[in-house]
Length: 575
Image 1 (tube, rainbow, N blue to C red):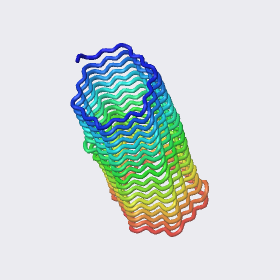
Image 2 (image 1 turned 135 degrees about the vertical axis):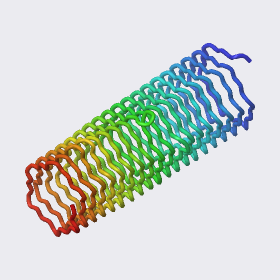
Image 3 (image 1 turned 90 degrees about the vertical axis):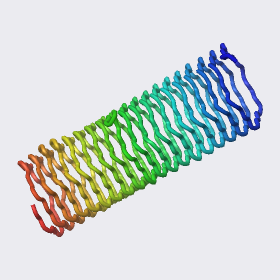
Image 4 (image 1 turned 30 degrees about the vertical axis):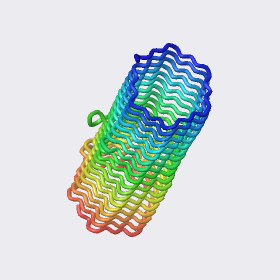
């Protein structure tokens, strides 16, 4: 049979009763090119569709070319399908003009296991997609097992949708072979409300993930609401490689997520090109409990070839409210980033109940220039912050430049860190504007041994005025502090340091050992404590510095109200 060619196909209303099919077994299906003109259909109303297992051989199709596709409302009853088993699926180029849909209303979709071999597709090119409201019931399916997914470039026009309202999405396990996609280009994505019930997925296992450039226009959503997201283990067996990610403005109204629960997350090499985002504007962010068992990343490399750039416009968010944040072991290999450039970062109140992390272990962290505009946060309120041993390799940053840092009240119940172990810390010029905090209140601050390699500032260290309201720490307890060489190649210049009340109950530190201290001129403005300075017992172990070399030390006026201190005990003092 030759290639079928059809002109316009005009169909009136189609009304179908119950459609029942037994087992259907087919051999290979080979179809030539299919060319259809405009397809115009009225209402399509179907009753229940019940099918048994569908088993098909290889499906090979030529090019599929469709003109405008216009469909009225699509109303479907329950759809129940048994196991769907398909051999290899090969598709040529898929090209479609504008797709215009009315409302899509469907009831529950219950499917058995979905098993497919390799899926190889050509370049899909889609015009504008305009969809009315989409209302779907629950989606429940068994295992979803796919072979390799290989697709060419995906190019789509504007995606404009009404409200998306969906019931629960439940998938047993999602298993995918290698995922290879060319460039993904989408124009503007504009949607109304996105409302989803619970999303429950078993294990997600993926081979290599390789994608080209991802380019998206403006992403605008009215409200995004997800009930609960529950995923078992997420395993990327091979490498995760993505080209440049370029996104226009991201605007979301109200963002609400219930509990986020994920089992282990394991990724091999994670490589991303440049990440460029326009203005990121979010309304209220409400997140329930965030629980991750284990997060393991071998190497995280962001950038063109090795080093890329993270460029974000203004980040503006209202309140961020989160329940408990519980993270098991965090293991990350080397992290290599290009320049990190962020415009103004403005957030309303940030509230977290308890923040608990297991033992975080990270390799070297290498960053190009780190530049942020003004950083403005409302009240920062956290319950207990508990971290196990924190081990970090070398920390290397180019110039670190931040505008003014303004925080409302900083309130932390308890900060407990086992041991903090860091390799060499190397920074270019460190430049910070004014740092303004209203009240800084911490319960017990307990840290184990603090061990750092060399602290080296290659350029100047310039900080504006430091202004703090009440500075209150209940107990300040630190183990041994051991630092290699402390070197500031340039000058240290600090503006005025102004504190209202400075209150610490007990200040207990183990041995403080520093190799060489080498610094240029140290220039500080006025040191002013408006109210009282109250310190309980100050107990320090041995204080040992080998060589101490500083240029001119210039300090302005020192003004303190009443100064009250308990016992002052220091072990050996060697400089």
